[in-house]
Image (tube, rainbow, N blue to C red; front, side, top):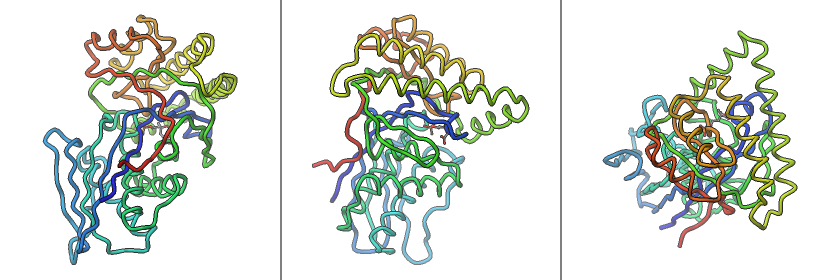
Amino acid sequence: MTVSSAPGKVYLFGEHAVVYGEPAVPCAVERRATVSVDAREDDRVRVTAPDLSLDGFTVEYGGEGDDRPDVNVAQGLVEAGIAYVAAAVEQARDAADAPSAGFDVTVESDIPLGAGLGSSAAVVVAGIDAATRELGTPLDPEAVAERAYRAEYDVQDGHASRADTFCCAVGGAVRVEGDDCRRIDAPNLPFVVGFDGGAGDTGELVAGVRSLREEYGFAADTVGSIGDLVRRGEAVLAEADPTDDPPESVLAELGRLMNFDHGLLEALGVSSRSLDNMVWSAREAGAHGAKLTGAGGGGCVVALDRTEETETALRFTPECEDAFRAELARGGVRVEE
Ligand code: PMV
């Protein structure tokens, strides 16, 4: 059996604008999806995922006349979970040139689902890593990222960016601009996450921004402003010592830029009452800055705070279902002993 894990991620800056070619900076965080893969004698695939729904689920497919489940992400998170695992298995089979390899797969995750923390990317990345290792053909993290991107592209009908899969595979802070993805230096960023228990519909939210841009030309300037603040944020990160805790001045400037980013995302119509309330709770508790992370519409906010104040305040915010500290994960996908 091979067990691999991959971290989730938050967007420090730049979601939505990245769709229009602006740079974005996602950062891996210490919340992981763990995938265990056991090669089978036959060509079937059995997926057990205790954390992907309230009751957990098991599904088995493969063999003659029983193809990979054809499920659409819009059908819901549980079905989507199966689709992502199945797409990861396909990529691993292809990488190992073993089209009929069978597996028992178990998925465990402490990343909130579909909430802007890269839950599906982490599962796909860890799944491809574990399955290729199990077949004796391990890939380096960049190759895992490329295959994970193809898997997400496949499940999401062509609507996937490389940001999540690259970040979850290589870890740390990442810069994404179009197809160009690279690691960048970042100090130990003290992230705090608030989760409203919900999930946004990424496709709908991205389409909403597109029609806003079409209807109101100046919305393109809003997107461009996000790109400008991302470039400013990159310069701030580059000045800080990547091996140390950042000075207050760096956190203060990053926080200001996060607040700016949230305001622009709000203007683009992708925030929600619960996300805004959590953002304001974090700010009032003394966070350096706070913003939604990911597609928006519901899900998670991310704040910067070294103290316990923001996490405590979020816990007392009615719209917040869970709050936790999520330090920058320096490592990406890895084998678990
Ligand atoms: O919600 P997430 O983590 O899947 O992030 C979506 C990010 C967007 O920029 C809105 C879409 C994309 O594909 O980049």
